[in-house]
Length: 275
Image (spheres, rainbow, N blue to C red):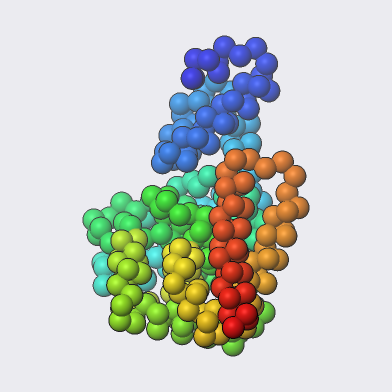
């Protein structure tokens, strides 16, 4: 593929194809530097970087954000998870370009990280929210849902702190309840200790909660008004995405994931109000 790109006569087409190849490699788990080392030689490296990394933040700004968040990651490892991590256990890594674009639409800062420490639980962790932004583990398969979950919770908190507080308590109670071993297993599989989920970390697990229809069915049955508030937040976010012009396959997939969550919640609200 690299040879084919190098043989293209049109520089613009060559740059476009190289950027597509770089993006594909990043989605497959390579870092930007690794992908660009292979394909960047066939185009202007600065142009490649400019086109592949298009978010509002520059690379240097993102590195500064990462350095701030890394301190929070290490503190959480030490204080909450009992793991003696150091800053050298975390390296900055690039997320997919479209994820940066969508985070820009949300108005949040996201950075990717690669965990190089020895703790298997921490290695599986999806990410973490902090006052400086959201850190996403590049090894995570649900990077968008992690960002989406954080933002839904954040927007709900901005609009209605009491509703956000109630959601926190219901998530914690659901995780703790007898018969919900499935969600506890899922959380353990992505690096969380279910017995240590609290108000400060609920936003970190919202993405995985979106994949548990039983929680939302229960919430709709017991407190449909709260589910309606969450639904309105998601509706507003989807409307913002509707303003996008050209959509890549990746962005279309993200929108589809939001629609799936939205439709699920809408069904449970309808069921509750019909009774």
